[in-house]
Image (cartoon, rainbow, N blue to C red; front, side):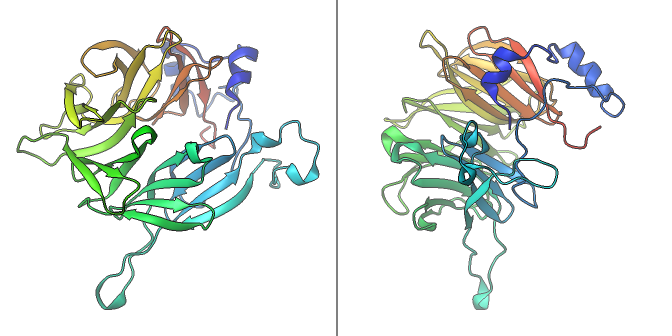
Length: 351
């Protein structure tokens, strides 16, 4: 975990351009000074298995792994605190490990003769901050989405209907909807206020051919537009944009040919109020489109040959887009000029 504001305004010792990053990638095993000045602020030892999803709120850090979802008291809540009760736990190496506030286990599905399935992994997490983080939504490998009540730490609602495991989940708070994307090639819209109420099933591609997959979903901050993407029946990266209120398909767009799968989507909002759709996939390029996905505006070359996550920080002082993938760098670019600023170095035993 890094303090974004500190590094944006206090540090200048960055890995700046793609040429430098390429050289650095080639010397990871030998260059002991690589990434100097880009050290992590906190190391949270959260799970014994891989972490597939993370959600950050003002008060919580929520992580989803192979068998459980954990909620943590965020280490940065304690900065400047003098109370001994407010301090984060620290391991033997002096790393802040946070305090686990809750642990949720995805329900095991019952099979023949009462047999139970393994606990499913959590591939996506969304948090309802409108209700002060009372509800958490998760997308699971058993094909279901779950709404959790954090007060009782129980499943409040199960959303069943996909025929394959889920990759992602997004909240559209203004409309009371959630969106899920699945390996079955569909994005489903659910009325979160009613059990089992699937209000729309959206296809990524209606054409016959190879199997399709929806790997990512994103909604704009006003709840007007929903985008979902993945790989179409021809093996190309594709995303679609839906007008949420009318459930109308507005645009179908294909990424450049070297991107065979869209793996992450997010909306960015500039200081002038303009909204852009940003997508990444199995390519070095991060593509910026207009909000309905009709026109490609810009491309930013990232450090990773395959990008799995995009995250927009909309604060006035840190209006940036962050991208992460298969390289040890986490790239930070400006929303205003759509240019690369610097990269964090993800240094965990790589050199």
